[in-house]
Length: 118
Length: 228
Image (cartoon, rainbow over all chains, first blue to last red; front, side, top):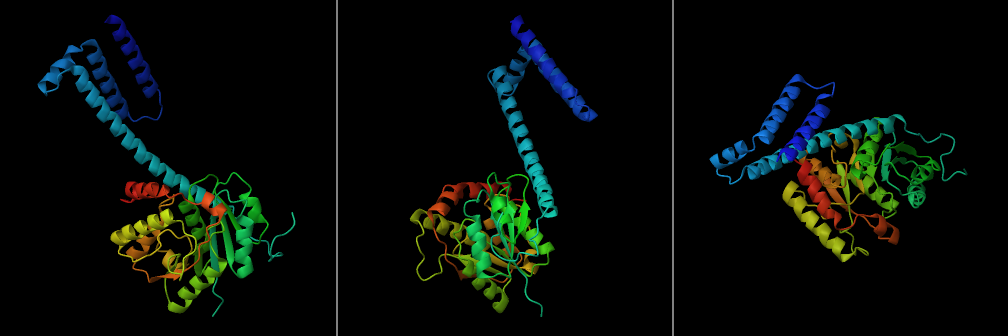
């Protein structure tokens, strides 16, 4: 039981660090991340708490409750990323369009007719 | 009155094999047309094929989709003070002579938009049955969605008066732009009519064109982004 706890704690800390090293991160986001990871660490150390909470709201096992919550969380992340992707691709389209129009190659005045020789 | 300036916008993605023939056909039909080729990030010699002609060439730095390419060509034509903008496919399915009928419809009947329809000709030629059914369903859905009575919703040959186009907002980069154009026509209450045109199903165009299964993708695009 101790081994898995050590593994989970180390992994959690590595992920948290990877998140926090971003320089341009709002303080509020840092705070939320630290709170979330603190919660996860707490659950790793005291797994019985999740079972207790699960029973309170009618779920059999703590692991199940965590599974449901994790699923919902990742769905939320997927939707947020999807929306961000749409915004980004719209911006890229506008940029590409402006670039294409600025670099437009106009027909040369001298040859107004069909294929020319290369 | 000054000569009407007519701009033909042709989006092209990896059409190097056929593009020269298409451009040649349009210019042979009417040399006064301004042709805009939008190379949508092709990986073949599409741009090189276009440079052999007296056309305007715009190149997307990456592949963005036919809707995006059309919107780029249209934006360019409008900035160049086009009076009438034609959309035309690169793959050789369309007849340059049909551009003339569409322009006439806009000019003489005071329409804002003339749309090509392959189903209005006396005897539509060589439309594969499954394609016909898919397009019929498309027409039905369009009528439910926009109230427009269109027989051919995914035909790429169209003529727009420039003033009408300025009201448009084409945000669909992919193939769903065809439905989006119809929504814009309905939303802006534009004067619009379908004009019979001929679509030739060559072996090349069948290979290049949209497969029928892509209809599902178009629906998905419309529903996932149509809300905006």
